Image (cartoon, rainbow, N blue to C red; front, top):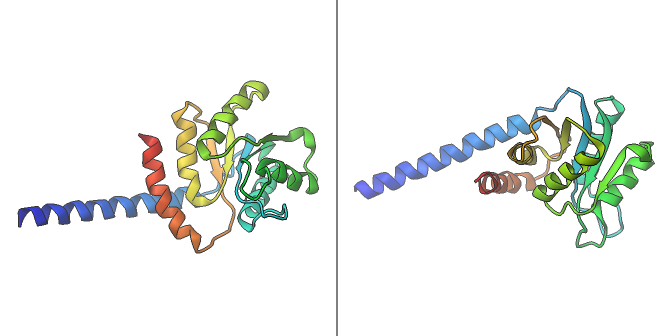
Length: 187
């Protein structure tokens, strides 16, 4: 009987923890920064086999492009890896920006950002070269809390975020996954 109560208490505690974290993740991720920063860091996502950007990635790119057009950022770093479809995400993201009249001189490409942690580390390596002091991270809303935590974990604290208005059914799975990814990378 006592064991059953303990299991029930632990189960309720875990559910409350998950729900609380998810609510925070939603509020934090959907609260777009209106502040200025030196650079936007747009995290990559799927590029289709034909070389076009997936709808999710296109939404991220539009969000980053809007930050640039509104003068919130002066430069843009696009970061992603080589997808299984055979395209470097960063290169395709840069092509999108160039087609939308962003000057080549303000775009930086990281084609080795195969995951969030690598994007963070590669961004910091770039910082040594171009000396930015503030960033706005652009990704899906559910991904931003963990991304900002990773930047802060390595000592880069001046990080804000912005997410596109793009939602899909897969977001439910992604929110669930982000809960575990956040705590795995935090500890």
